[in-house]
Length: 163
Image (tube, rainbow, N blue to C red; front, side, top):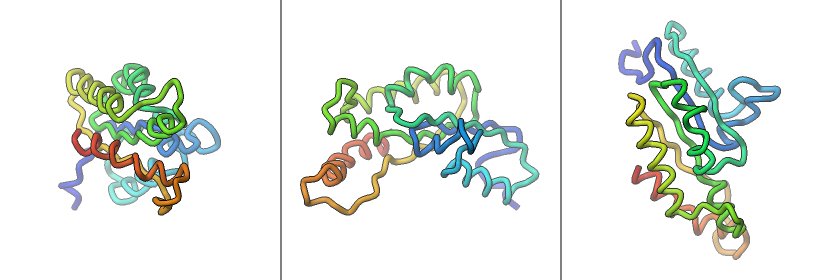
């Protein structure tokens, strides 16, 4: 049973991203947070209790893909993971809409995303799980911030799907 499950005994799985990945991993919900990372670990452990899988959560709230690039060696490569799960993008988009100095356009998003995947391919044998950036709203017509997010998010989704 479970022979086809992707994570094998003895492997290391590293989750990295923004607040959706972080979910309190350095506070009351250390070390995995109380979001999708914890749920995934709990479900895998319940289904495959015999597997000796090591997990790391390196999510940091507010991060962009550029932030991931800047901390990639210390927070990813040093662990030499077998699997890397990346969930990033919504803060990049928010900074563009906010016209901030640290805005990460879809083009820059693609460039930094490619760089982190490329360096990982060169320095590890890790396989990847890329999770789409998402936004919870149906307001796509009011010209509000929420509707602006929904208009721009497809550009970031294209990048992740292309990777």
